[in-house]
Image 1: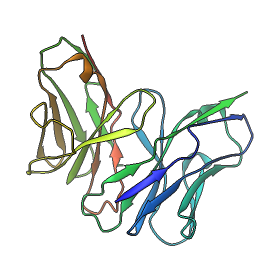
Image 2: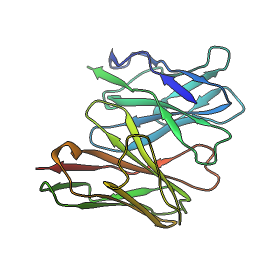
Image 3: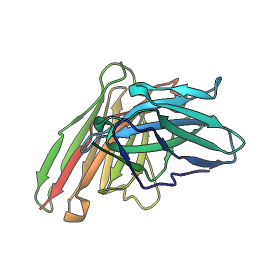
Length: 115
Length: 116
């Protein structure tokens, strides 16, 4: 079984400032890692994913994340945020060996970007 | 690519009636579809997993007779909330995964259900 911890329920930041959203996971098996974004009253959109290879993963909208196996972390970063980045961000993991692709989600982090 | 649609986007129904929500994968074959429920300001709660042509697998605590899931084809899954009550009001989101998904799911836009 896996679990995902998003340490911050809310992160306020000013426009054009850098931001890091933290994600730690626990798993007894190898996992795939994902970050999704959810805008109000919408479904989830994939920001980026780590499947294998380079531990630094670049995604859409200028976001990137780094997989750190020793710290079991997959923190999301953006060097300069925009007002439009205000949304809920979910970290998720999936068992590499699962045929069902079941995702385990963190509780989410609300990114609030103000002018 | 990898677009998932849901219909309707929102629905209001009276207590005791049933409502059906459709989830379609528009440009790929979804061997597995997932149904989630999301309460305000909370994470997604997996309700059930369905594979095309098979019965859905429900998560613990989810009433399978109340939330009927059908995955009749590789592009369509439906969730029927039977005898709806106000406590069933929620945001329902479906997602779909293809055969070589490697863990990735594609999410629909969600359906807001309000039971009066």
